[in-house]
Length: 68
Image 1 (cartoon, one colour):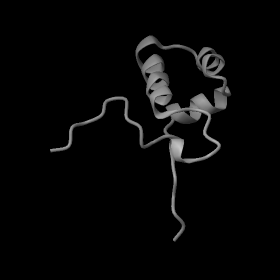
Image 2 (spheres, rainbow, N blue to C red):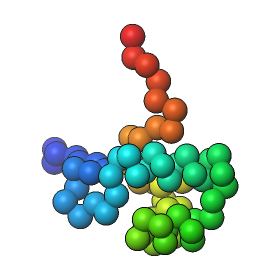
Image 3 (cartoon, rainbow, N blue to C red):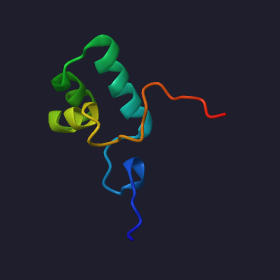
Image 4 (cartoon, rainbow, N blue to C red):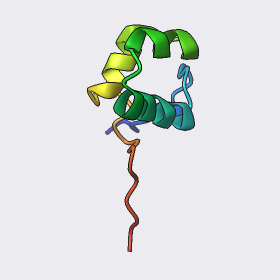
């Protein structure tokens, strides 16, 4: 079974995990458009929409839960 990498572990990733959290936060709380966010981070609107639909970066949570 191949080693599955995600997010920043991929060599071609243009975003960091912190940036993805910021994107999720901006869209959720401020309703910032995908176009504005894409321009801010230098990615496409498709990238932003994939993050929002949880197709990519699904291991990043906007509200991380504490593990006991």
